[in-house]
Structure formats: C-alpha cells, structure tokens
Amino acid sequence: MVVVGAGTAGLEAACTAAEVGCHVTLLEKTDKIGGLSVEISKIPAKKRLADFPTYLKARAGQLENLTILTNTEGTLERVRQYHPHLVVNATGSVPILPPIDGLAQQLQSSAPVFSILDFIAEVERYPEDLSGKRVVVVGGGAVGLDVVEFFVSRNAQITLVEMLPTIGNGLDASSIASVQRIPAKGTSTTTDRHCFDQSTPGRLFGQPKWHGRNATLRLWICMSWHEGICSRFGRAF
Ligand SMILES: Cc1cc2nc3c(=O)[nH]c(=O)nc-3n(C[C@H](O)[C@H](O)[C@H](O)COP(=O)(O)OP(=O)(O)OC[C@H]3O[C@@H](n4cnc5c(N)ncnc54)[C@H](O)[C@@H]3O)c2cc1C
Image 1: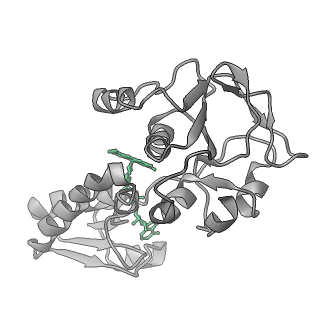
Image 2: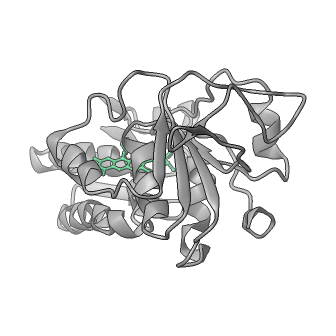
C-alpha cells in the first residue's frame, strides 16, 4: 500500500493499515511529517493540535512494515514503482479563494492582506499588544474565529465579516464554547455580504459596522488559502 502525504490523515491511514498487516510506504514531499496541524499549532490557542501528529509519529515509529520517505513527492511514476494494491491520497486541501475582485492581486502584493497561511507563517512575530490596531477578518467559520480569538487576546479592534446570517455556522460544541469565551469588547461582527473594490485597494464595497456605526478600516484580512508564504508583516503594522 502507498499513502501519499504525511499529514494527520496520511499518518493515520498508514498506521492503521500497517497495524493490520499491510506493507505500507508513506511518501511526503516536504522534509517533515505532520502537515498542516503542526503549522497551526504555532497559534498559541492551538498549541495542543501538535499532540496528534506527535502521537502518530510515535505510533508509526513502532511499525516495522511502515516506511516513511520524506522529501519524496508522490508522483504517478513513483507510486507505480511500488506496484501497490491500494493507494491512499492524503495530500491535504486545495487552496481556494472566494470570488472577490482584486483579492488574488492583493495577496500577491505588498498590501496588508493576508491568507490564513500567511498569518500562521508570521504568527510568532506579532506583538503581544496590538491596542489601537484595526483588523478585519473575512469568514466567520472555525478558522476565522480562531484568528479573531488570537487578535482579541492582543487587544486589537476586530471586525468580522461573514456572508451567512450566522457566525460560527455548524461549529462543534467545543468550538462554540471557545467562541463564547471571546469577550464582546473590542469586536464587532457584520453578516452583510461585502465585496472588495478592485480600483481602490484596501477599501471595502459596502460599509462594515463598528459597534453599530460605519467604520473606515485599514485592511488586514485572514481568510482562505493560496500558494506561497510571503513575509509582509513589517509593512502591515
Ligand atoms: C487556522 C486553522 C485551525 C484549525 N483548527 C483545527 C482544530 O482545532 N481541530 C481540527 O481537527 N482541525 C483543525 N483545522 C483543520 C486541520 O488542521 C486540517 O483538517 C488537517 O490538518 C488536515 O490534515 P491532512 O492530513 O488532511 O492534510 P495536511 O495536514 O495538509 O497534510 C497533507 C500532506 O501532504 C503532503 N503532500 C501534498 N502533496 C504531496 C505529494 N504530491 N506527495 C507527497 N506529499 C504531498 C503535504 O506536504 C502535507 O504534509 C484547522 C485548520 C486551520 C487552517
């Protein structure tokens, strides 16, 4: 059996198959295993997310019929070399961008507009005190709320933009409990649908509210994913 991708999904699949007697080769294109969950654990509130890949690595280390190859991309040719009976694709999520005018350009530019992966890459460099800084988070699902929680703890002023009528739609009970612990002070939410104005970078179409009043915002957006981690922290704050 060949498993492609050594994130938590690939590690779990590889361990489970090896434990029931399969000969498993796990291919990972980077130099480390654990995938996204290891990166996310750099967010202070998510530190414990690293426990799962740590446990999986220990479990994998005890399995003689499981071989893990890092720095090895799972291409069609390489997978065929193993003549596997079964192939598991565990290569993670495909980055998506919502259809917002100018967003892709802004993410590639020096504008203070960030994807979630940009945010995580810089997370250890954010000042402890962001009093007076204004942050807009686009997307009020689990990931957006993690970002809100992070900035609330650093005293930033946050506006959360969500196109659905509900913030945290479909969240599990534990995440809802964690969201309920976010203090209302310093945060505002809008569930109006906003689009970004391509001709005026850094401005929103539609008017976000700040405690019921119209707000003018310098944008810092953490949202869905794109390829390439860039270092624009210094220019943002
Ligand atoms: C901010 C944030 C917070 C989150 N919080 C939580 C949480 O609290 N609880 C929770 O359960 N989930 C959470 N998640 C989601 C969770 O992190 C992911 O669902 C999970 O890590 C995905 O694991 P995966 O193994 O599917 O993919 P990944 O972890 O992305 O692993 C994919 C692996 O495949 C490798 N790969 C890709 N292509 C190839 C190839 N061709 N050949 C070889 N290797 C390849 C990659 O290098 C990577 O190592 C969060 C996500 C985010 C963004």
